[in-house]
Image (cartoon, rainbow, N blue to C red; front, side, top):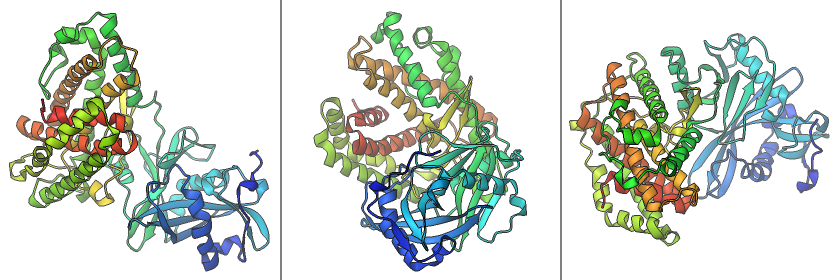
Length: 542
């Protein structure tokens, strides 16, 4: 039983001279739905990605009908056009329900369809619709639909629908847990192309039998004249204790607590060069005494799983989308254009937000501006003719938040790629070091986030904590890169020799830190000190 609907919050009931079964063949319904109803609804949704822009108009570009025994539903594809001269596509499953049949009090609008009163709601809030999707996946081989394709994966073993519920807080996508064993991720923002998350998940499960990401079990897509659009991805639900970001924050907090507990003198901790390769036995006893052995064992496991992911992504010689490639002039032009544009964008954002910074953040920002030609030169100096390694499909947005902790092991998820990148750019084959660099930046973030979030917890000056943090970071990196390199090379992944690996790592670390700078300046300027500190460290600024 849902709470009583509060109709008072709506100005009026929308009246249409059509019934629900023909709604999306009626031009007047579509026009009012797209302009008067939707605009007010989507701007408040967590999954809507255009909040920083102004809507010009919304257009229904396509729709399809899908019916259960009791109800008719629509899958609606929307194009949101912005005054800033760009657009985004979204997917919305839609239901029309009389009040007594509602499973939710989250409604889009009260409507009257040919004298029948009810509510437009997001269909995912209706159990009947969630069950319908599940049943269609189970029986997908028997369904002949020229427009909508339900695909049942090889690992889909469920025989019947038992239950469904939303998974946690709604983010950029909406995830539904079925039978407490499967997760259906509905992509809210869609692309006229196969979603990389679907593409990579299915490839890793069905072609490579990769065990360290949730198994692909099914998908829903819609056929368009321009290409297939992925609407949903189903995977196994992996038992876990939360993500690796939460895990790392707890670990780093304890490591900083140990500075006081173990009476450690930070200035006497043995320091190393960034990218020094370290077996765990090579980590000095002073560092093991301070940080503990277990964190390095966990980092070693994470490095192993990362290398295994790349081996799986780079070892297919049949599927063109996953065949490794060498470097060439086209890639070099694409890379430099992309990064010089991004760098200029970050420079503009920094100059416009300099007034929001003070102290160390302002000092590092000015240092960044003073060295902008030097930083830009790093990006321009990418010489593809020196590269002997291969490019592969990569995760693309790899960090601690994309990894689940399961006992002493890890599962890797969310292969959608970098949110700021176009769908085409996300599918470009890149150095696997870009993922490794993403994880290293995540280590750096976890260390600095711990310092910033606990200003009075550790009895040391902030600069001393920064010094300890940088030392810790280099040991994390050292153990990870040593393990990763050994596993990757043993699996015949061509990542190049040491000089090339270090060059690519530095290049990708700098790219990641510049990318982060824009996010921090726009959303939480105080934290911009983290990427700025990272850039200074990568560039060896004194």
